[in-house]
Image 1 (tube, rainbow, N blue to C red):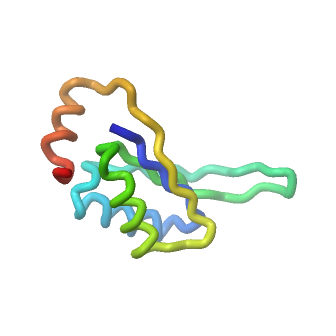
Image 2 (image 1 turned 90 degrees about the horizontal axis):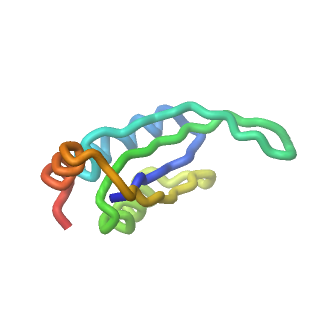
Amino acid sequence: MIIFNIILNDEKKAGSISLYIIKQKYALQTHIDTNKIITITGQKKTIHLFFITKALLYSTIERDIEKKFFSKNMIIYATPVSHINEEFGALLRKNIKAI
């Protein structure tokens, strides 16, 4: 399992991506956080969309998101999930798209 992360600057697009992810059975649910990035040149608002999914789906999801929702400033990456609640893990394995 991984946490699939998408950083973008359009909250409406994050909502559209979330619905797409759930309809495609790439995740059971998504999370959207509003954040602030601070750099040497200043600050800007960003949206962090993330969800837990199967690691083997990473390339498929990335390709789909870039094809349907491309944005020049979008950042996509994943982080591994080393432990997960047994019941939630079973639910994910059962309901997320088969590989």
